[in-house]
Amino acid sequence: MPAAPLVLASALLAATPLAAEGIAPVAGPSAGASMLIDTASETVVGPVETFDPVGRAELLERELPRQWSGTYQSFAAGPPLPAALTLSSVRAMGAMVDLRGEISIDGVVVPVQGNLNAKSDQLDLIPLGDRIGGGLEPGGQFQGLQGLELSGWNANRLTDQGGRLALQPGSLPPAAEGREQAPSSSMPVRGLW
Image 1 (tube, rainbow, N blue to C red):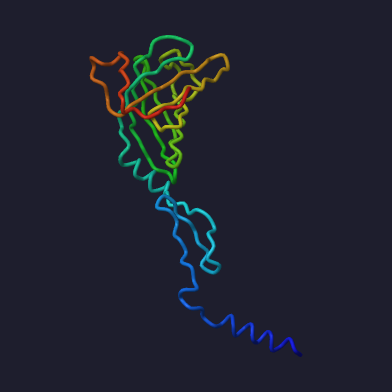
Image 2: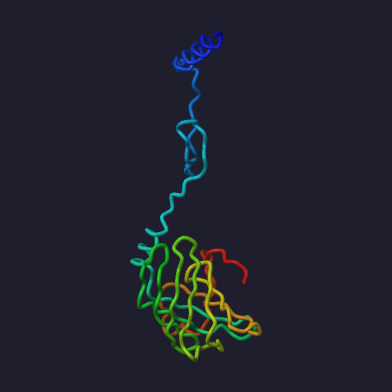
């Protein structure tokens, strides 16, 4: 029975509070990251996601511009062609935004339908017409990683090299349509296509 007094002494020591100077303060996470801290063991468990994709989708539903204009250029060759996108319906569906409207490439207007991921800004935009401007064939789609601003044409055939659709919010004045605009110094860095 000599173990019983040892267990009782250990329990009493564990129940005795330490002096305040014996406890090291827990450093909080940096301002840019939120961390989950297990209060029982005072250990950092991992990062906490503070981004709300559903809330951003609802914000995009209200604030996403309905008029977009820019150019489409084939990777094969040829000059940039005028392009415009008009969104008639923008609807948040969870973390996704459902897009519907019309796209005009080189003067040919067709209906489009697409999805924009509110968390990652990934875009899938499908032209629904039988005849699409700029030499594009039905069955392909525009896919992008920067929302509506920059996307690439993924054709339905491997022999089609695709192209680049670059759009900006707002419509161009009639005199500027068809002319490629010089890039401004404030344009974001874009990936290679």
